[in-house]
Image (cartoon, rainbow, N blue to C red):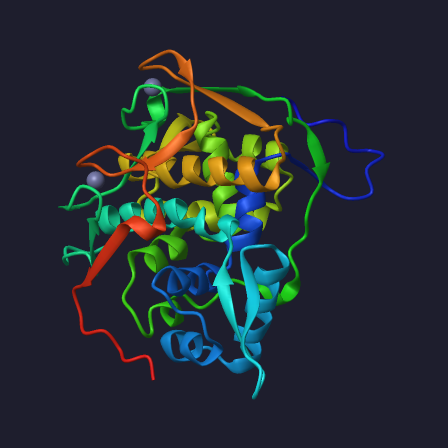
Length: 322
Ligand SMILES: [Zn+2]
Ligand SMILES: [Zn+2]
């Protein structure tokens, strides 16, 4: 779908996208790290604080935002003295497979030759588990080259949601201060909304600077910065396609194409929780020829994964909660 004419628009427009909506919620790193601790069973303010090493004010603001967005709910567990804790909602639990898809990506590409920080076991089948994103129709793994996209019932354009200034990207090293994490590493690479939008357009076939700019309405300096970063981490190859004058395009590497897992998992979650029943984007799996819902499954038994069905073993000593 071409971007509509902009002359009468007061605000810049962006394409309706469940991934964009998801990244608006989790893309700043800390929100995701808070949810991760939630999946590990953390519920109380002081425990979040000791696990994440966050300043009180920041943690308090993030917990409120996640509660407002519907991922956590605040529950009073003691009357005297009055004390509350934060519990995951259905919507919050359902983000768990998205976290696993980021974890799989981080383990594969960003572990730097070290063994993954976290071993996972799928309780129903009893096996060590390496989750992957599969097609709901045929059960096979989703590969970027084997997908076709088209506009869904929710396709269109809406005014761009401008993130608040305070939701600046978190200093990447801070996210891993207490627990080494493949999710944190994956978020360092792709965890802001522009990064994800740039990769999304690459999945749709965009390779050239001008095409990203016209499709996203992204400022040239931001785009140049993201492309440079992506080339540095190995998500794009910069390839000369013309010599006089010299011109370059950016092509997804194998590592870049592997982002289709987290991308698809975020799309599914955003469709379900943030886009009503009108997905902006439909996709067909070329292996089986069917429209499908991406789902994160256990590589051993191929069953969809839920937070309650997983057991963990840390590859490093676990800090005490108190
Ligand atoms: Zn399929
Ligand atoms: Zn299993």
